[in-house]
Image (cartoon, rainbow, N blue to C red; front, side, top):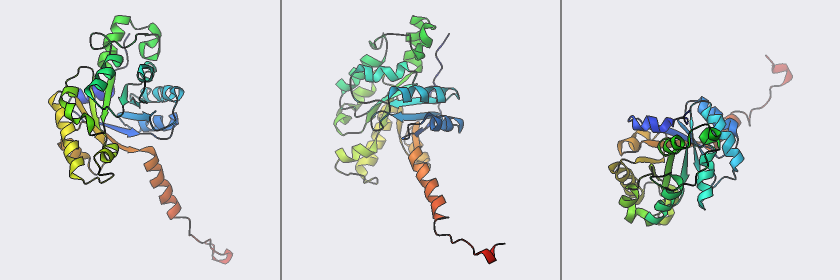
Length: 265
């Protein structure tokens, strides 16, 4: 018996770009709807959204039923914050605000099994099919079919970016322009040369060391991001889509006057 293989790892290993949608609404039905619509990956959040592990478990079941990966952005904290979503069978985790090589080594140590790291071993949870997977096979498959993402969203780690990208077990380097713009002193200036140069640097350095390169984008700049090396792109968020849909409906109906009785067709 084996773990479910990662859809995005397979896709990226074969040379394709993987897409993703971020969810701020903590409803597993939206996760399932995104999976049914064909997304490669659904991103749920425990850093900025009040999600508990029960929400993550439901989202896992909703997405993997349709061969869609689930990426959980974890809270910055101890190793349990990192491994619990993985044990719930989240296909990957994203660690926000990686600040140094030492930070990356900590993530590596606690999220990958021997010989890469020393992730605490259980195997009796959903990811190990409740001990139905042989323990040695489980450890090997978890190292190969579950992915670890670290976010570069501050200027501080850039001086050690090459060393971070050379660490085994760190599968993807993800550039977050929002918080980075604050740290670089150009808050939300999306056309800033500093943001553009860093976006390019992160992708190029990640790919130089055979890591996957991820970032946020949209359909408007998707091709441009691919051209500079990104092969994992989060293309939107549920709240953005809902706002657009809701506003469109309201704008077409809120000022419409009813017809008088004698004008009814």
